[in-house]
Image 1: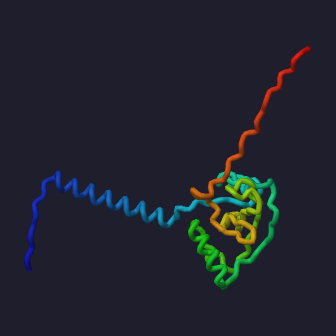
Image 2: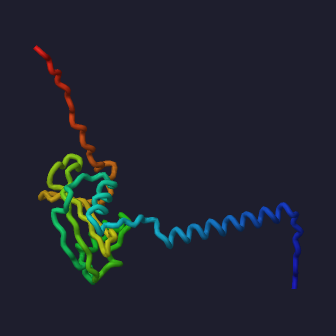
Length: 172
């Protein structure tokens, strides 16, 4: 049996311990972040919570949904649901985790989508008061669908401040 010993100075040994400790802390922090997930949890149980989310995303809608219904997410996804779930996964959601469960579907008309002042809708899907998915879509014949979050091409149009003009009240 062959044994080799290495003599390290205290400085080198301390530096090695600090480096290994820092690597362990970084690895633990990365694992904790992965376990906790980086997606924010949005509450959508009340209209106030839904309106706060919609406002945070930059969309302008009516005060109440144009449609609200309870749906059941299918146990088996067909091609349409697979495609829709792919869109959800791009946003950090995954409807597969909710298969067979009931969810609330809220639909709102959007009034500030660029180049589409009409025929735009926002859908929020909530389960037990937590947002589990959603989309923005154009209901026109050649419509489209995207995630809830606006991108560079679909930043919501900010409303122009109402022009206030003062008129002088001349005394004759």
